[in-house]
Length: 253
Image 1 (tube, rainbow, N blue to C red):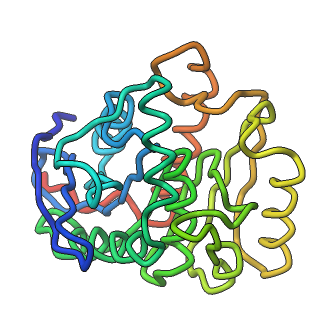
Image 2 (tube, rainbow, N blue to C red):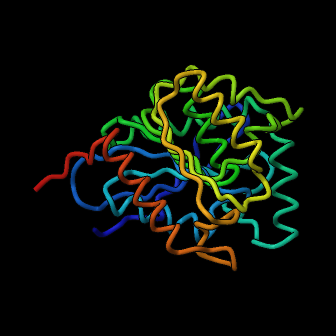
């Protein structure tokens, strides 16, 4: 399926304009919407390729710049120590309410997009995995959420003040979750994963849980931690959830 990229929009939020890039099928019709949350590095090559992959399977994908308060529109942080340090600094400097406002703005944008059916899912990687989890907890119009090695949920340390309520809030979700982890990921140790899973169980959240023999960032197709076999498996699980919960859309023939 031919893809259309390079569609940018600056969405108003209480914390300043947030730029998003939209990836969508060129074929006429309406498709479910997905907000794809990036790692701390923003819209890198691997993130954009993930968005294109999802769009190529029949979804309208909006990718927001998560640090729009701190960086000029279009800024991408490098996959190096300096980029990681800046990304982690901004992660804890950003107001928790700003993360929530960003999610609502992106979801509302997709709902009103002429190519979107109005059915909504979220997906995120690393920091984005937490943001996907939180968006599903805070927004009842999200029907499916994919969270890849979501950082800081177990520590409740997202945002300024490092005292988030993402885990407590998940009891309000209407979404089905797909939780994916790497067993060799030092950022989310075994006890952290068990804390999250126990909460999902106790709150009766509908979810699927996978722990793979992989490191942090195993889906990123740049760098030594990339595992293409696990990446393919992960994306197939992702498509299965989104297709089942959101349907494949309304392609004109």
